[in-house]
Length: 502
Image (tube, rainbow, N blue to C red; front, top):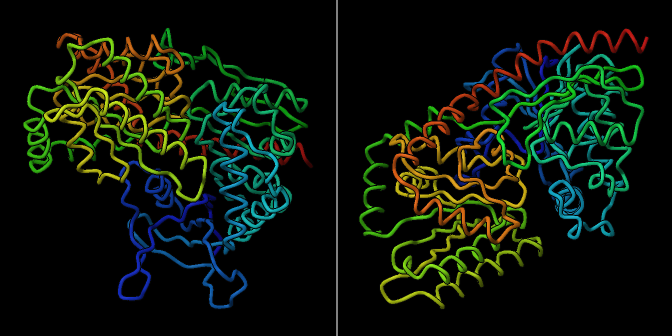
């Protein structure tokens, strides 16, 4: 059945669980993952489709069920699973996406690894996604492509189906031209993206960087520029932009540029934070802490997250503030991202070494300053830790958004707690009332956590009230609503582009 909305995303829209030798499809349990929100868009169309990849030992096997039909609370839709061999997955995802694109997107030129990239394989995988989307899309359908793994899909799809309306959303940072243009495939990537009718980003800076990159490589005119709203301008944060190009013309096509910061499910988090079992768990944590203050840090094991730099800062703070000994604890959650990649293994080793060194230098039988957790924590348990913590210390070196910061704020129904946030997290442009830190500065990092520890209750509550309003204003529902409005406007861009092409 042709689909009015086709979502192209590398992940499948469910979890596969083996039960008694059979695979069951279950709802994704992540409360703040975007998958449930993306599926909610299917409720507004007669039929939708989702395109994803699935690893298959033998992609050519006739037993592989490539297209399945789903009916759930979100509506009726089909899922096209593209079978990729383990080698294709490694080349497409682990090598090209993570070793070449990921460091450039986050500004780590020194970690960029061009040599092992199999670019023909990346092209082939993107072509297969485009073919699947073209096959599923009804006439004039909206095809919504997600993230840098699928940069080439839009260009291929435009050739296959010039009638469809193409939207793209970028979930990571987008770097400046000086950084992005390190990629030897830069022009091919941008030529694909300008075939979209709208390209979306989390914050104005990433959108402005995209326009700068496009203008460095192609003949692009900015035909509309708008002022950024005051609620996304905070003095002293590195990622603030004051105006934004919102409509481009390139080779006779109009391309809209969108900014839509993703949020968290505020209602769900508030419900979890009010649950009696969660409150009892939080109370038990506080009792175990005694008079110690709890600093909580949560993230993946990734060099972009600044885990080692944060632990080094904590070590300096303990070294220079002996009055804090025995009175503060850091719970550092660093969940291993991918054990198959050596770069992440090294970061994990460095984090473990730093935590061990701190505990060895300062710990006593009664007090261990760092609790290092490397396993995933169930979300309801994490909510209890958010409630029990005095401070959330979130200081990535670079981050597209950072939902942990928003989760912490959404949890704090009590109106207390301090958020220390990196100015290089996308969330900082909305959350300037946090204690803002520069993770590249020893002084800034150390002073931020000391300031948070000494902050009077009145100031804590004033800051938290502002933060909670900001998080509620742009929750996950608002993100979805904004994008639905943009899809309605897509028809105008698409019709003009089709007319111009004719």
